[in-house]
Image (tube, rainbow, N blue to C red; front, top):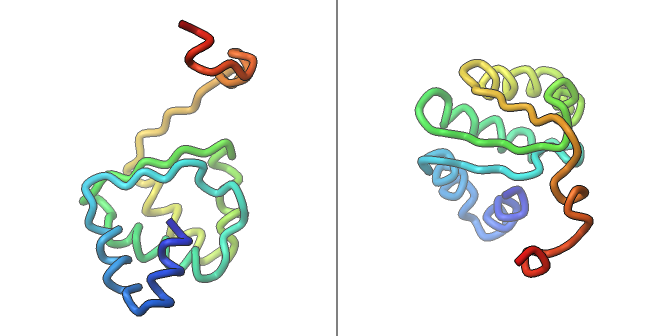
Length: 113
């Protein structure tokens, strides 16, 4: 998502791309906050979250516990704003136990048939 936004910034379509991401019915971000966000990433994500707040579905998956998201976002003020929009009306599902990939021992779907 952030790479796509950077390309859009380079070709002049950044505002249009940001608006489009804010308007999709369901935005799904897999592996959220796996690495610390850059200044540009956190500002873009705040704009997307602000546009979507209470009007569109946003689904985040992450290996990182929610308690550590603030540090990964970075700037405390922006992190507070993003998390307020994400967590306020959220339905959280926290999975427990070992990863399904680990349980399968790295086997592919064909091996299971």
